[in-house]
Image (cartoon, chains in turn red, purple):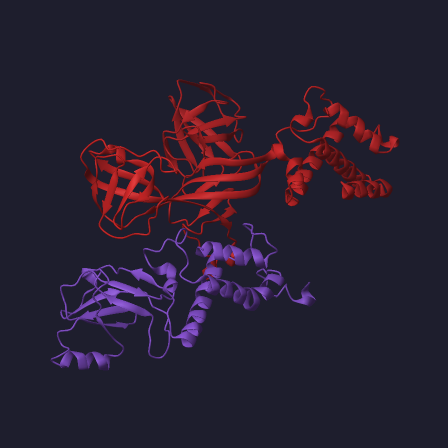
Length: 370
Length: 210
């Protein structure tokens, strides 16, 4: 189904007397509003497989994101000003940017500047962050003057992993990853296969736990992330895989002061301002919580660094319906049933605006039966 | 069955078999109910049978802390509270050496401790008294490792207890009983009452408000 097909169906459903009043721009506006509202309707009724199928192309699952400061933007970040001195560019954002040095950022819709590489569409490595609302990067050539309040950050990432979710629309689920520092001290790390670690006290580590180890000198193969197999009250072996079939091999004599963290990766539940008083609602690594505010998804507990999240969400519609378009097949993005629902919704919105009671009732019934 | 599994069953049963992230019952709240009802059931079963089921107990190895010591003739360890089984029986089944084969005498009162300290026959015995979260061990000031087996009031407070992996220290019949009691006495009413999230000093769940 193309946009032009949507136009025909839409016009079939409304009275002919409106045809001269309802031009393509107005139709697109009604359909845009209807699309947004239909996604919300679909999101609210996401319970059965059938309802997921309606907007399956809008549902993003298992998206892994890295986290700065226990928060992640779930919207574009607007730019208020971009200036440059020599080849160093300073960007000022409308809200705190949550960027740290070394991160990569990509811009869109910036006007008035000619950079090499081009300011829009390329990634730049952040050099410094002089303030909460400004950061710098370098270019190889810079000219022009920024048109104030134009442009936005559309991507923010590190090593190809996002630190911003620009197409976030509605929330479905989030898992939060934390490092839980282990209190024991390492007494020995064997140069063997598997690597065996002996510690100075009993712990709650169990076979299958996932650990991150750092700070090992000499036997450096013991640094990294491993699954463990308990070998005794004070010792455990390191494996690369969860099934404990690929044992890690030592590569030297153990030295250094290792830091061992258990990797805790659990599904978070929402926390609301009004329930923060409740002692049972307090977040912890084992009971992570999330809240939305200031444009961020904030990840609790805030006093422990969240390393990563895996998020499921409903994205903003990637394709708008244009009733003049006969090239983009809308069914590549939306199901036919969903498109019919959007059209009925658009007709319903239109009937409200022209105060056509009969059309409103008819379209409402169609929506109810959808 | 682990504690989160028991909590999930309770939450699912109270909400028509579905648990979502928007569940009105938090894990921590359900955990606290489970601990409370576990204590009640254990106490009731002990008063009936005078027997402590082996699944109720946990081993705890308190950490020795030099900074925690404030008296030259006693060694102190921080130990989580146990369930008091009856007037005469506390929930500590074994306080002794780590190997588990040499128990210290457990004293129930300061008066008893005083008698032990004064009597020449008992003065040299290693003896322990639990008071206000602290286990005091007399008779061996060189001690830095002990083991305490007990029926602890909050099983998750034991450092070696892994909440995600270890079975909850309660026998399966009693787990069923705990679930039933929580569902019938605590959650049945709450599950049917809409949550009042509004900070408006009004009970929006009241019939006249709806």
